[in-house]
Length: 330
Image (cartoon, rainbow, N blue to C red; front, side, top):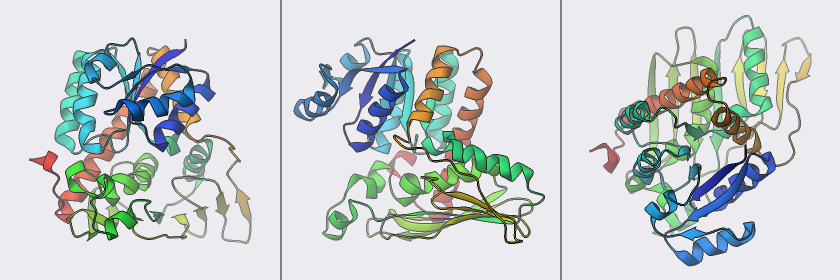
């Protein structure tokens, strides 16, 4: 069944998601919400005759079945709550919620609306190359640790250096390096290894108190995972998952283009496959499968929801460890 999709947000990532939704053949764009009509119209023009709304209630009542939310992080909670109350399925961009308090409230609301499905758009964990990593980890005799890196210069960092306060670099919008880029390697770590026993975050603060970059340490029973991320510099380090002599080497933990298994005896095995095209297609296909057949795919949905909640718990703990407070926390 083709699902009627509505989108909140008109930036590049929303465009990429709509293109992926159409490529999957599981959705049709049916409505666009924007605070400014002209911005919404410019976005919608790329996809044909799509209605644009500047009133959120009108948008939610427009006949859409699924909403994708890519507004600033601090707005996610209220918009998700309203969507669930309208019996709409929700795909919310990461980071989904500012803290565990918000997540617990949404989780309770979902119990009151059992037909609604909520997804966090963590595209990389749905890609075949990520599944190849998980499979190889299951075959390794021992895990000694891992280092996961995702650090790239933000398109908005020049504005920050010029004295501006971009949304993606301010606590007011529940943003910063951890919630914007750190969420990728954290998702990978928790999906691959489960919940850590403890976690610590060594953040490099910006002048406004948000984190510009940082290093998180996730402690497991027998090993540690080091997670490095940031928005004010470019890193070209690979990510690694360590066995004993053997190692999995990943070019980029968010993009996953090249994954190689090194057995420590001079033999390398390429685990990755090329996946040309839009990297969001895989996740959009998974979401549609679950929505269209919720009974048959209930276990997969519960696993995704649990993973999303665990990531939220760890991210909240890391912020608290670093003393970073969002207005949403109060």
